[in-house]
Amino acid sequence: MAEFQQVGEQFCQHYYRTFDTNRSSLAPLYGEQSMLTFEGEQFQGAQNIAQKLAALPFQKVQHQIVKCDCHPNPSENGVIIFVTGNLLVDDNQNPLKFAQVFYLKKGPTGNYFCQNDLFRLNIG
Image 1 (cartoon, rainbow, N blue to C red):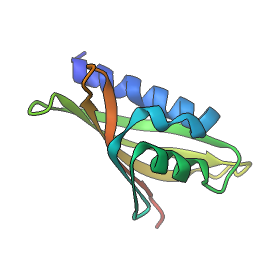
Image 2 (image 1 turned 30 degrees about the horizontal axis):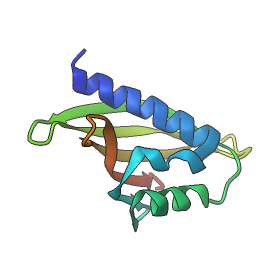
Image 3 (image 1 turned 135 degrees about the horizontal axis):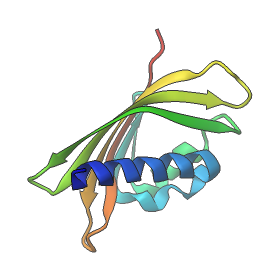
């Protein structure tokens, strides 16, 4: 498996596991210049992004990844990730369909962080 694919899949597993169990602790995955677009609303900076995600109006959530496609970005040694999946919210058994794009960039220490995050529910 190519390194970018492995990085992308590992990031997604970690991100969604953290989101589903304690989404208020997602801030370290972002940087100060990171940007989130959540259903058309934009937030910049790790703390603003984490606050938005922590304030979402549900108690329980479970992400089910259906597809995780990854591409390298050789110019910045980054990884572009496109995820489609199902979202189970609170006690609702009817899953919501979602799509999410992440752009991972290498930080000064060589670790990847999420520079860009775009999220949309796929509602007819």
